Image 1 (tube, rainbow, N blue to C red):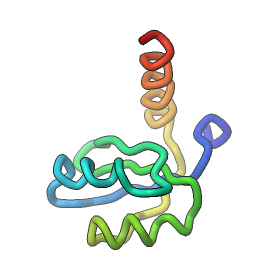
Image 2 (cartoon, one colour):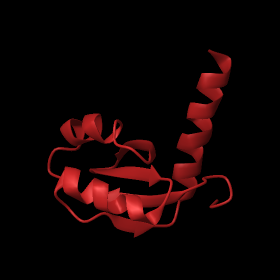
Image 3 (cartoon, rainbow, N blue to C red):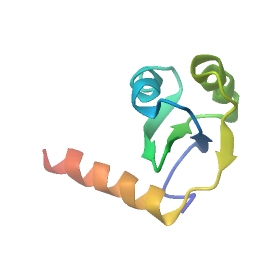
Amino acid sequence: KQDLLQGNMFNLAVDNPLQVIKGLQELPGVKECYIFGSSIRVRVNDWSDSKIIRDYAGVDPEPVLPTLEDVFINLSRTEVSVNE
């Protein structure tokens, strides 16, 4: 799973994920972010990018290992962009 998803994965437990995710997508170092249950999954280039995420979101990002669902979401997005 980790080989398919390059970078590092964090989980963000925020009160307003739909608002927070809009700005996260624009932050340097953020490769991908999406709603994951009631939180946000963020994939970044490097662990040091977690400080930028924390400063923006106001919560500490929790490092997580990618799940099968994360891989599925990533592959689904790749499939869509290839077919467009």
